[in-house]
Length: 375
Ligand SMILES: C[S@@+](CC[C@H](N)C(=O)[O-])C[C@H]1O[C@@H](n2cnc3c(N)ncnc32)[C@H](O)[C@@H]1O
Ligand code: SF4
Image (cartoon, rainbow, N blue to C red):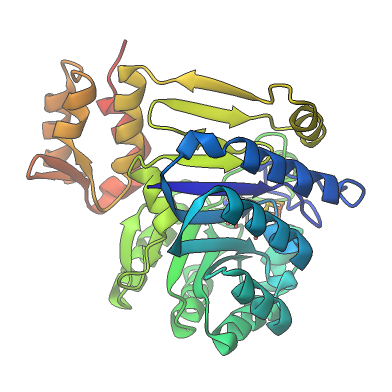
């Protein structure tokens, strides 16, 4: 049982807040990149002989920029070289301005059954300072088109913690997704990443993101509103209607193995993490000439212990103390920290499993770091 991630490193334009790996000047080498990704897919088939692929995820960058013939090529290469479960969850990240009824039908014909739309906001002023390629009308229209065609399970990404986001505006954004019956919502707090245009704007004072108290209030408001509307929170930033969890992302949190293809993609085989080079030209050159284009790292028991905490504590499945102990003895302060955080009502322990509760969801990174093992 395994998953496949394919990184499509192109975007039409640079969103001010984003530090993911992508290039906006890709027209000249677009086909060469798709071909290099297909070579990597083919070359690495022996890593998962006899394993069934249950999830495929096209992430980016902007996978909705892929042309039909490129999707065909990638799917042909995948189907020729891997055992794909006929019921596999196949997700494509799509930007609102790329969505049309025609393309939705093409995606359906290719076998894509889930879309993750980078909506970010319904407010025109947000989309403008973010330098998004879509406008507020497209934010709504893309959902309507997906619902009209009616074959894709739909997830949307929203960002909160935005400059000047009063609760009444945040409430309206949340109501929009609920009223459209969107099955899955990923909501991220705006992070000011180093070396982005946003970092510069914040430094100059031309953009002032919400402060920490406002961000926490917006997060708790979101959790409350979505729960009342029947959504389940299954990870810090992820909410879904019953049974609509992302199988692909859940497998990252459950420690299931996956292969990542394309520049900057990561892979995990149960013991080692692999990181493809984050440079389009170098990736293509080295794939084509058979030269190494990745680094890898074998996880020590302490790494693995800490990763289990970091990835599973964030989920509704919690972290099993037995699974931790099976890889590494916890640090001496581990159990007293668990007691301390339970008394603060940040977590609970049931059936030897630790779960975040209440405001603990806001403290996940701090709690995780306090529970880490040390070499
Ligand atoms: C890698 S992006 C790709 C999705 C797609 N290209 C798009 O932008 O619509 C995945 C998601 O991460 C979130 N994201 C990226 N940078 C962020 C930041 N600095 N702060 C908060 N959320 C961010 C956005 O919600 C975005 O949709
Ligand atoms: S947020 Fe999405 S569209 Fe914008 S630059 Fe990042 S990857 Fe590209």
